[in-house]
Image 1 (cartoon, helix red, strand yellow):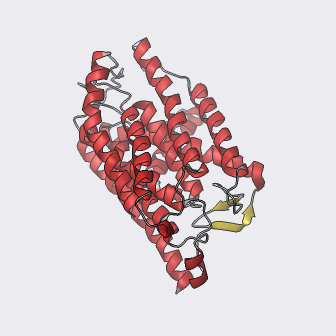
Image 2 (cartoon, one colour):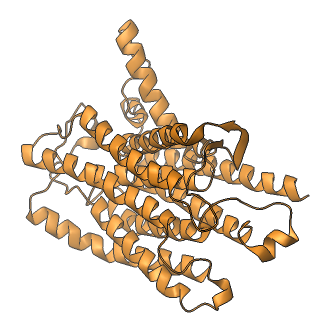
Image 3 (cartoon, one colour):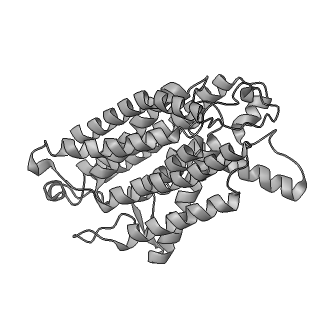
Length: 367
């Protein structure tokens, strides 16, 4: 637990004090976020606010992961599940960094062109697909000494569903879909001050708890496995908990400056990176289907966006005033702060229900 707490604390401190530095640097570079008005009150006065703030919490997460491993070296040998960086860490942090890099290119093009047109949608999807395929192959084909892989050939809910075996190729395809869907879900949610940051913090916090719980009830822990018939077949759960906690702490530090009125935006570098990390956490913890509930806000915003697009292209009618969904409520007269707080509430309820299902499954198994 010490390593997880250290990682979260270090990430928080780096992000909290590093974000003002980033604000000054990006402001000096005139890396302001191009804003389209679209008749939205929330967009007034935001022109010129520096973007690409996601760089800060990505860097903070990486440094915090190293700090967590330093903390591990202070523990008695029997408590150290893995001392060196693992394939799990390489996959999760790789998704965060490389999908963040796709977002960075998008943000850079927006700043350079001085308009809101960055990478095309096809360009983003291609980048996400290539990255997802690469790390999906690593997650499925590179096993640890005991044969455990980061991802599984089964579709998972709270654990792997035994009868839903899709094979290695099918599992890579599922991996790419989960990463792409979650990455774009967080990206769509990032439209109001602090909205995506706060919601991501809740989801990442949930995965820190799940990862640590799985570590405490891990099948690879001979002491626990001999004492109980119920354990979690995952790889490197302590790494999962450490990375999730570090990212959550980094988001909290960033939120200090990103909440209304935002002094910096996370940009696509932040939203695409965070979404990819959350998708990776879902696969690594064997909670792929449960992540739909844990990340319920992202799911709702994505589904309503799809409904709007399909409805408009097939019937010429809009179901919502505007998508993503938070803009619908803006046009309905809700204030930006009210929308953010209420959407955070929705995100929190979804996380609570998801964690409740996760824990209830454990109680049912050991009861």
